[in-house]
Image (tube, rainbow, N blue to C red):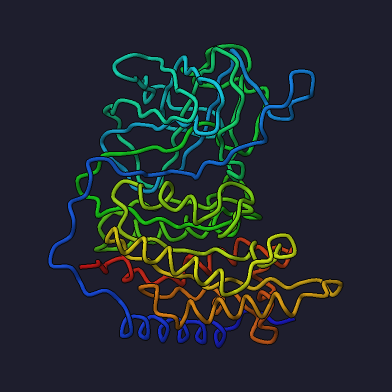
Length: 422
């Protein structure tokens, strides 16, 4: 069984260095004369929202949880810190108004417990409650709060009326706590009777940080969302990137938003809206966005028996993403698709691998992106290029292990985020 050796690490470093040099010489944007002004508010955390199944007929069982007189405590791991905080609550996929009876933010100490001295009431137009209309998003008031860099917040939402959890981020890889005995938003030790690993209704936590240089968005599917990473440990590759950026000497603080949706596809609705349909919402409309990394397409290829997606269709769609980003002055990097070894029973394994290779070659050499992050080169087994290096395989041959995610995050050249489009 191949192992990670110094020669393998050196080989990957050479590959990435050459890719970066080639991308820089060929089609990297020239430095802008002056950076665009950074908005007053930036997202320190903003998971992409997905819908659930439509509400069934009245006599049918509804598999989607509905809560009433319930408090949900959601744990947020920040990227940049700040001196003020606000939240965004989404009822985008709801078919009825959502009532928020109370909302609190506090520093999380461990589990569902918070630091009592840090607890603050979140208000909406000066009031402690709000109604979010169907299809809408509500932004809270900004309040003074010392948001830590790379720290944990607890945001607690009290739901007094019947609330169907129709808008959520399903793969949080982070425990959310539920107490179905009334308003517990201000509780220090939270009396949870249920837990889940999804974020419900909470679409973003924004901070004010005058020193911040903008927002980087990582958009993709389960490999960006962190499937198979150790829960409650923040080991997704965007987490690794954020830690490196925010602890590197001389680097200005930048927000890092993980806009991955597990099961997502580029072209068609899979788990959540397709990338081409959600690109504005989840990327271009994020406050202060300056850079985006696109790692998407594996689900279009692996499920092409349903969608019949060709490599050329994926290339055309990704070219559109690059053009849309450039129209907004956003620097966009293409990430190559990581390996996914198919079972021997898959008669179309060779065809699917050919699609992956064709898309990766275009990402590397097509010129549409401002540069390339070669995750394929980082994670593949040199002896079996269609497979992960064993140490980087979670065991399902599709998703990286913790070590694989770490290698991906560590391989990104931080200098990429100093580039600006004119």
